[in-house]
Image 1 (cartoon, one colour):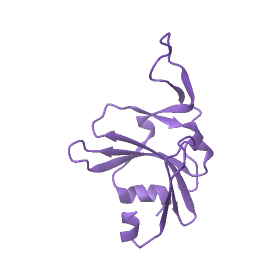
Image 2 (cartoon, rainbow, N blue to C red):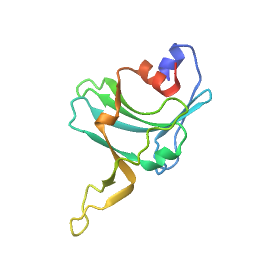
Image 3 (cartoon, one colour):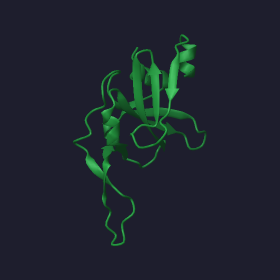
Length: 141
């Protein structure tokens, strides 16, 4: 929001869902572009190599996932990880990714599937070095 304000005073609408079951954490609207965003976080140097993505997100017309990386010592943000399409287009299909499993087993130790979550590898995300470049990914030039 600060970047958009400084770079030309564009009006950014920020909305949030009432419940966390539709696959997105945040909605950003700039002009005619509306982005439903699922947010993830991890620290720089983390061993995380995959993210569970809610399949419900893919029902939105211009959805994406942003992973915010941060420095553990200074809490400085960036770089960011991006999984999505160009403004107005949906994210790449989730059908080819495996279904996530519960982290804890049931009484027999069986970890059942979580059918609404897909496991997307770190390698499917593109690195975005800065907030200005992330804004371009979200809304175009």
